[in-house]
Amino acid sequence: MANELEELLGFLSSPSPQVKNAAVDIVRGLTGSDEGLRSLTAYSNVALPRLLPLLRDPPETAAAAAEALVNLSQDADLAAKLVSLGSVATAIDVLYKHPDHPALARGLVMLLTNLTQVESGIAALLQIGDDKVEGLNVAKLVRSFCRSSSRESADDTFEHVASILVNISKVEAGRKILLEPRRGLLKQVIHQFDSTNPLRKKGVAGTIRNCCFEADNQLQNLLLISEYLWPALLLPVAGNKIYNEEDRSKMPLELANALSHERETADDPEIRQQALEAIYLISLQEAGRRALWSVNGPRILQVGYEDEEDPKVMEAYEQIGSLLVGNGEAEPP
Image (cartoon, rainbow, N blue to C red; front, side, top):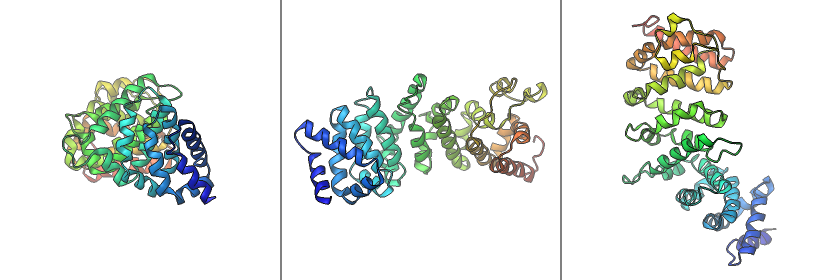
């Protein structure tokens, strides 16, 4: 088997397009099974350098190679190897040369999702160390993510950018790029919270939560987009009751209007928990608590808590309540 596999991997570099296409199709098939993945992993030092250049081949061949690399890069060690081979730069370059080939574009975005699960992949995507282009890749992906949402369909080519954003916002450098006011990236991302696509919605919630870890030194940048931030954080945890006029009169219009009629709650408890964790991180700062009171946030949390049934989400509500009470803020300051 080993000799046959080595021979197969050699065909990936064949000058004959027919032979190369046949070989990449077989390799793609192998990556669809545990046994095939184990075999290819054992020969990853040969397989990865042969597959990666195929991303620059015609889109049909490139899409097959991308699918194989997506499956292989689920292994963190192989993802790190691919990063060391320059796969992040290659994927971005090919993605924007063939944006109108959905199968290839989707495969490349999924590949970038896997590559950014390792630290070296995040650093490569952020282009850390190169001041002239740092954050440029992220800006491109955010733009594609937001533009494609207006054409949402069963095959949402850029939906996995949501997961990339979660990955890069786990590190300080990624959060700083997203929070930089002149880029306005987080503001663009927050708009996607209204998406009907659950992957987009959950990714946006996770990204916002991660960015709120910077609340201790970037609170001002977060509050600069409070017009969009508070609805994204508070509406999922507001319950489904209609709020009375007195409560709504203490809220900005974007919240008051949404809470003046019946609505669907966020079905995914993970989204509700992430929203509450973000509110908690903001509320750790005195200015953050003042901002929460200014939109009547504690009242929204009180009403939402009454309808909540998930134990973990209830605990997240209670954590914020304890923080407010502990700071002597059971009533508006």
